[in-house]
Structures are given as C-alpha cells and as structure tokens.
Length: 333
Image: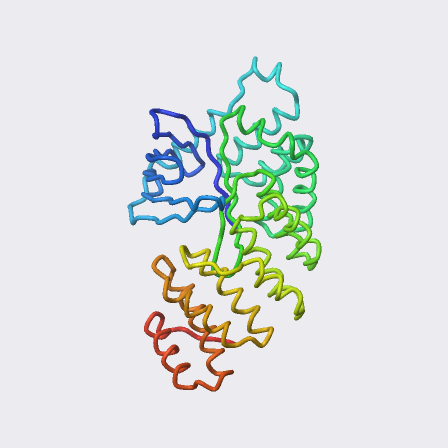
C-alpha cells in the first residue's frame, strides 16, 4: 500500500499549492484531471468518474536539492504556537503534532502522537495507515475499527487544518486504487487487514457493507471479485455471484479489463470455457489504456484456456505475443 499526505492552499481557480513531506508542488487542472509540478518531478493524474480511483503517470525529472528545506517549511505550517496550544484540547494537539512529525518524515514519532489521540477518527486512520505500512495488520485493524465506530465525525480535523490524505491499496496483483479517508477508505482498509489476517469472511462482510451503499462502484466490484475467486475455495455460487455482479461490461478502462479477467476466471471454474475465452478476447480487443502487465495477465489466462480446450496452436501464438511484450516473462502456473 501507499500513502499520500499533504496540506493544500488554493491560489487561483483550478490551481492549488500542495505542501507535503516530499516538498512543495503546484497542481493545475479541473476536478478529476491534474498536472502537478514539484520537487519530485512532474506527473499527470486522471480520475475515473464514479470509482474513487485515479491513475498517475510520472515524467522523468531531476530531483530538487531543496526538498528537505521545503519539507521543514511545510511541517512548520502545522506548528500551533504557544498561545494556540493553550486553548487546543490535548488530543487535538497530539493529532496536529503527529501530522507535523509525519511531514518531517518521522513515522515512529508520528505514530506515538496519533496513539494519544485515538478519540479522533482522523488520528485512528493515520495510526492505522502507519501500521499498515509496516504490515502490522492486527494493530492496523484495531485502529480502523475505532475510526469506523466514529465514521460520522471523520474529516472534521482534516478540514480544519487543511490536510488532504489519500490511501493507495492494492486491489489485485494488477490494479491499485486511491481513496480518501472516508467510509469507503476505512472499510477497504479493514477488508485489507482481514484478508492478511486470514479472515476472508470478515473481509467479505466489510466489502458487502460498502457494496450495499455503492452498488455501481467498479473498485468495490473488483475487490469482491478478487476476494471470492482468490481467497475462497471453489464454490459455484460464489462464481455465479461474480459473473452476475460484473455483467456484460465493455472494456472502457483498465479497471473494466481487470473485472473481465475475474469474470473469465469465474467462468473457467464453472467449466464454461468458451464464454471465459470470449470474455478475455473482448478484454484484449479493447486494451487501449491497459498496461503491458495487465495485457500479459489477460493473454496468459487465455493461453491456459486454449490448452484446456486443446487449441495448442492458438496457445503458442498467444505465448509468442506475451514474450514480445516481455521477453523475461516466466509463468509459474
């Protein structure tokens, strides 16, 4: 997983100054599409409407030598000062100090402060993210459960101190999603913790709770599909759920292609080989924005189907295309 955390200051309509632990940057563009220039280089971010997800493309650039100085300046923006501390509640003060230490790059010190302010869901989320980064899933789960119990209050302190945070979670081996710390982000993090703690049923409950709220969310569908296909032993009913949930979608984006991959895997487990092959073929035909990695996974899945169907020539042709994309490709299946 990854984590982005910054303070944002509006300059002009469509232009914001972002203050983060990696230095200052400026973002330009309308909601959903941003071009950002900062000490770590240039990047273009494109949002996928209705998913809470975006993709980022980084442009090569030399690193700035002033990054540390900018980071210190940004962290000082969260210094409450002597008089303000006198009227600020202790737990809120601890939350602000935790954010400041995080901006300085001291995760250990930040975590100590956040643990003193677990009454605030923002602190619980920040602590949970820091535990996730060290793969301490048990403590991370405890933190996100606290945040969830206080979900109606989540966001107040972030807004008060102009703090913006994004959590990047690996939904599948081929796809990651970026979310803000809201009910969707918290429940997805809980599902992530439960998966790693060997409790796929609780992870399923977390995702289904969200799915009832957002039945059209593509990321949730992908999370559920991955969980039902990969973490549960073969169950025809679960495979049918995946096929029904995904439906007859078209490949409009990488996330659509990933959904079609899991639909094909479900059909394959149900021994519906021809429909599974056709699903993968449709996904590959519309792979305009697919990464090479996802294209390889889709094509290799079709190789396995061709072999099961006795189409050795077609399987060989697909393997040749895979090696053309990645001559070092090695499959373990």
